[in-house]
Length: 389
Picture 1 (cartoon, helix red, strand yellow):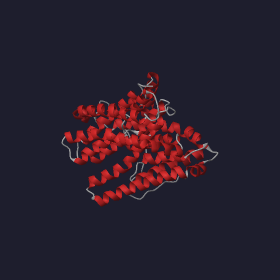
Picture 2 (picture 1 turned 90 degrees about the vertical axis):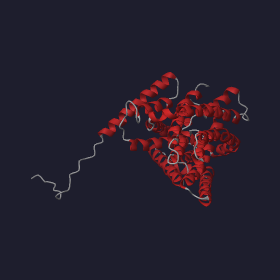
Picture 3 (picture 1 turned 120 degrees about the vertical axis):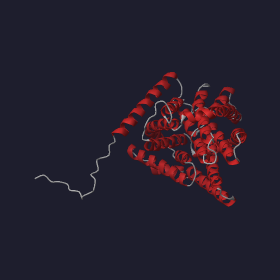
């Protein structure tokens, strides 16, 4: 006798969740990115600009808009950025980081002096209030750690003589953002001097403590992660990256800095295992991140601000080149290498967009202008960086 399942009257029978559309969307997206990657390899250029252009062509207001499951894809894209920064941190030990940070302080000071004023001045020329103009200065100041990390990895530049200087500048820029973002959020919310001081103190103390733990107790941390099983190491390291990044984000510090510090803390034989196990996942999720960034931009909103964004892009390309050129002076490198260091710093990305999103409520034009500027720098940066090999 067959049994029947009886439900109370009025209770709907729920059908199983249909994952087919999600599978189809993700499959088509990843195959498309694979085609772009093949083209980039064939043409000898970075794949990042191709991913960004593809996202722009398929995003809001485009000719061929895609109806993707954006919540899921965005989460994966953010994880891709964290893995980029984690793998970047793996390349350097705690001692190397301390040395690079000391040598990078004058460089990042010059970086701020050269690259913050263009955005600030343009904001004032457009008739903006002080806070939106300051935010635009932050947009033009900070380079993209995610894009530049991918660029260095793709073009086999991790062992180039100028790379330690470039990385020290990127790390210090991110640390500046660890203070800049909380202060900006408080100013936008209308906080007073006391609240600003508390936010700055919390950001500085939390970041300093994280660096101290990563540098001082890195070997102990690595010994806890070491295991014979690749599966165990993969799960442990991946979970640690997400956990630390999430905690840093909760403390109003960049999650990217947290992922970078986990990479710094890991040393010894486990480093090679981490690179081997996580590189494929990093490449997949990072490609989705750059595509998703382009996907979120409405091409129609870029036209009214394209001229101003182009002028900013030209000006800050020159100032970023000057930053890299001057910063590598003491390393006694040749003209060609110093120029390559400056061109590597041109790309802007994730932090610039975060800054712009903070101030859109105060100045609606900040969002489209920052998007146009970042798009130009994110596409042009890898291209000009590959011009000098």
